[in-house]
Amino acid sequence: MTNEHTADTHASPVDVVTKLIESRRSIKPADFSGRRVEDALVWQMLRNANWAPTHGMTEPWRFFVYTDAARIRLGKFLAEIYQTVTPEESFKPAKAAKLISNAERSSHLIVIAMKRQVSEKIPEVEEIEAVACAVQNLHLTATAMGVAGYWSSGKAICSVQLCRHLGLSPGDCILGLFYVGYPGTDWPSGSRSPVGEKVVWASDA
Ligand SMILES: Cc1cc2nc3c(=O)[nH]c(=O)nc-3n(C[C@H](O)[C@H](O)[C@H](O)COP(=O)(O)O)c2cc1C
Image 1 (cartoon, rainbow, N blue to C red):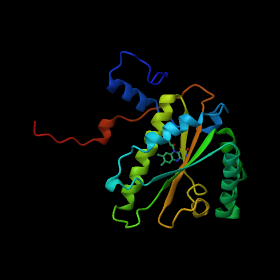
Image 2 (image 1 turned 180 degrees about the vertical axis):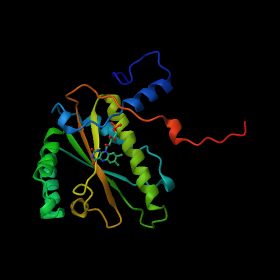
Image 3 (image 1 turned 135 degrees about the vertical axis):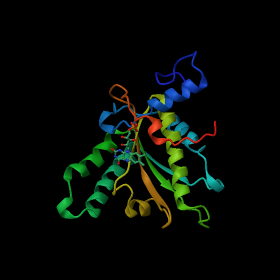
Image 4 (image 1 turned 135 degrees about the horizontal axis):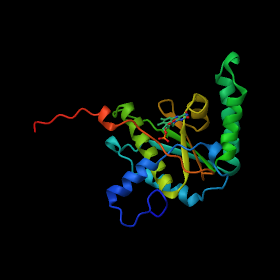
């Protein structure tokens, strides 16, 4: 790992992983440079996603990757779905336009889906959790490569219409769309409130 988010030849493995985790940012297509990301890098992101933990080894994550002209078609299709699922009085043309421009500005679009186990033995929430772990692997890998990404949800993306279009089954679901591109701006910094506020620690010591 040799980019600005990981580069420090004297750093311990824990320092490297901490820096990578803290550097992972949601960077939106409006801030992408427009340069295409090499397919080999996207495959590496997907291979690392595939190593997510999975209860019962169901490996429920599914990724539908769109690039080149296919990503433009998907953006237009999402805008159509948005129009279909939105009551006329709350339809915002700018939102539809954004779905198209987000696709245009991205290098690759990755639809994130959960494939439901046929027996439904593993609780659905655990399958969704496994997919979220896979997305984190993917996003961290992108960060290590200096590739920008952003997990977007919303009713057009997580729609029955898109599920059907992708040939998913009724028990499956779409968890979002991951936009991929090279950053066109400085890598943003992030913040979190202290972890101590979210931890209850019991000890007999
Ligand atoms: C399941 C999920 C869905 C998300 N959907 C959206 C979204 O629809 N729109 C959006 O602006 N950000 C979305 N985000 C990204 C968050 O806004 C982002 O993670 C948060 O602002 C923290 O920023 P960071 O990722 O750079 O740390 C989503 C994140 C997750 C985990």
